[in-house]
Length: 514
Image (cartoon, rainbow, N blue to C red; front, side, top):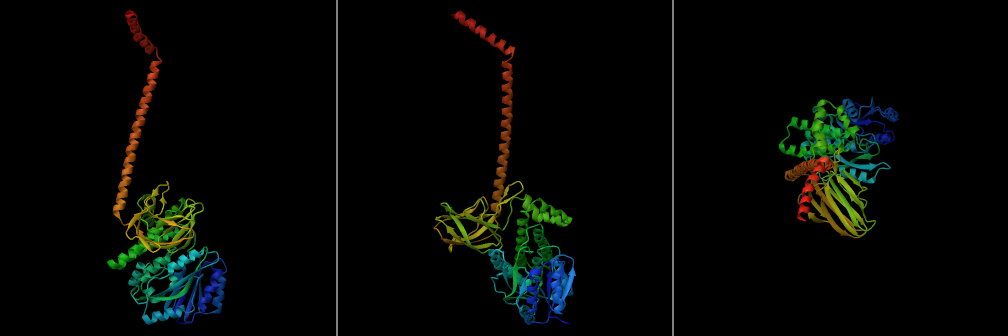
């Protein structure tokens, strides 16, 4: 095939159990004018053999084999040899609808688009917590309507304002000439490459649109890039995104209104990086020594100084403690929670309740009360501590809070771990309570200044107390020394002789009186 309409680029690394399903979904496309560029990124399982099998069966398949260099390098390798008018990146453990290529290419041709987005649905492998699938589906669910053609920067602003920005490259088809003209490719060596790539290609597009139809199926499985254990690569990836996008924004001179829209996303990535970094032990933290001198300096300023030494952190993570106080066995049973990302746990120190942490900026939740009692909902900042165990005050601005549809407050209440907002409500066994809240980073400088002044006053008071205690110890030591000296003198002959000398005249005087 001389001139494929679209190039499907698939990086492959040890995805043998799911690879056939992925490749078959491409072969089932209703449009035939495509090529498939498979990049075997050093797989050690049978993925390479499966690729050879499909390449032998269908001439539209080609294979690039390289040592393991990561997903970004694999995608870039495929992009270099792609010949299609459009480019689509597909992960080798996911699959697509049969009409994805036909619909997106037709939409792009009809509207002369540089990029077209479409809807995604998430499913989980056996053994994956259904709640994790629900959370990721919520993340990919679009709340706005973006069918009209707009510039990329306008569409990106709409995504960010509506909290609809999701960076997966598997839910977009891009004009290849547009990528070449703007020299756009993937940043190699990081795990958050989709965030950086999608932000750039969306912001620079002359014409962009959204196709409100589910065309891509994302798999959640164990040991994938998304579900891997937390390590230094995650906060480092967000750090690189912030650094590169800030440089990108300055280079392209976006107007003030657009910058006001874009910069909060950078702050969100920094907040995510800081929250991840503070969880690390000494081994992961030492990996900063592997960075260049420039990167190490910037990483320390942006990430480490906030988490290691700066005690007035302004995070965007809200913590909610929910507890049912009452008789023995009282507790709350989680029914549903819809923020993303979110962490729900039942910690040992809260056996009859649950704790939720979320960066979403808003939360809707339902809990069922087991046993008659009193439901308490605590809105507070995350409990952050340094290596010495000192708690950092993480301030949050709660902007509204409603229970069972009744607005409890609709004004900013600034909270932290030691200054929380507590809502109490009598409940019956089996009663379901619905609540929702919204929040943002603390923007009240007066609150932080007041806290700093309080901390300074406490420090000064402790300093004065320490000084008083030192003086008291000094005086106690002097008194003890005087006491010992007096005891020594009393035991000497001079003291005893003196006693006799002072006693004898008094006795003689008494005898004369008699």
